[in-house]
Image (cartoon, rainbow, N blue to C red; front, side):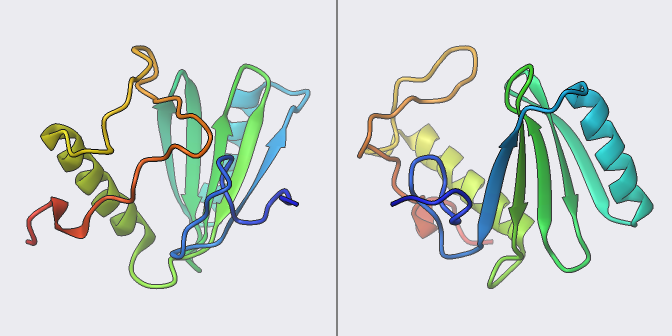
Length: 145
């Protein structure tokens, strides 16, 4: 039986690099106000905070001194997701994400088999059927530096 917060994504898959949990909230106060207040609190603690637009909403992230990444994402007009991700078990988490994205983009550009999906023109996201997934990007998709 799947458990909420078991370190797996909505598709039931996890990874071996980190442990993470997600909670979804529908707060009564405006999401942007809640996110802004959280970002201010994080900055006061000396944490590195980023803000970006993601699929029409805002995503605020903070990196703690211990290497935990906290994210507040406006999933919709009234739903907020709170994600906490552990430090990567090996390597740097942000560098790991950048490397995975670089390999994914290189495979997309080369039209590598198994990486081409019909995407929503607005969000650029692919809606995959259960059991259909994109393989983890190949290590050699990007030439070594």
